[in-house]
Image (cartoon, rainbow, N blue to C red; front, side, top):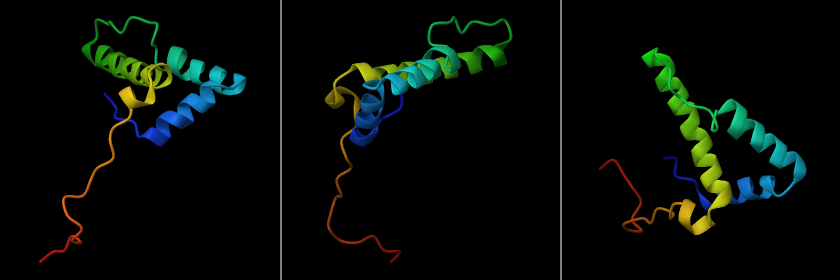
Length: 87
């Protein structure tokens, strides 16, 4: 599962709120990612590819439909204020 940042989720939600953005995201999620299709294929390589494509659609729809707090990861907090060095 992809971990979106808050900014990424807000951008996706803003795009979804407009007619052109909704059409573009619908094409990506339903047609290109194959969200509404069965990923099963007798060829294991095609099956794996289809399942991977579908998971992209699922991640995008989660970002669009769920509250930001449930989708976005928390920003990484540094363990100390000391800069990282090679020594």
